[in-house]
Image 1 (cartoon, rainbow, N blue to C red):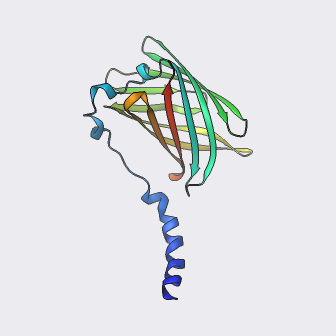
Image 2: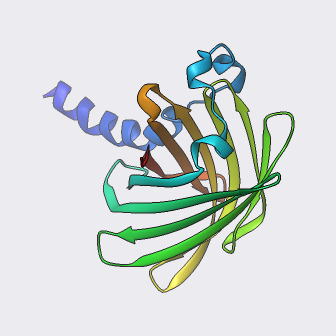
Image 3: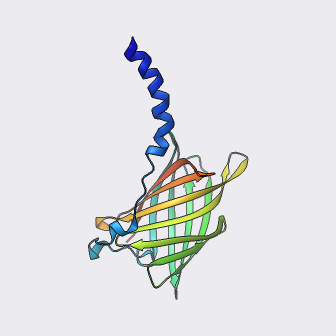
Length: 183
């Protein structure tokens, strides 16, 4: 009986702290020694056609949405343009066009129609950390949310992305994406 009562008390506490405990603070420097074959450069990876498969989970781990993205990347000088065409599992379609300035020191600055201000990113080895704010349609309203994206270039040209989504500094969910280059 005492074990059951303890479990009823502990369960809500574990659920309440799970989003905080799940937040891992990566450090880009830990990826500096990635093999040269896995060195990430957005302008190389996204040039041409790329397909992505993604999902959004709320802060409790419940799957809320699935989607695919067709991406066309073009490079002109030091600017990478990504034309992203989203198709969600409910049939909704969305387009985002990124204009990304390539810095000489492994940094990136990007803008897009729904991005607030300028997205900032840095690469080290096979990893990129990319931060920005977006006005996100939620139901009949719009929420301003922050994205803390971590992209990892894996063998065979697979690029994994884990984005931590927050509102008012509190994590509200995570986006997981897998990118595959088209031949």
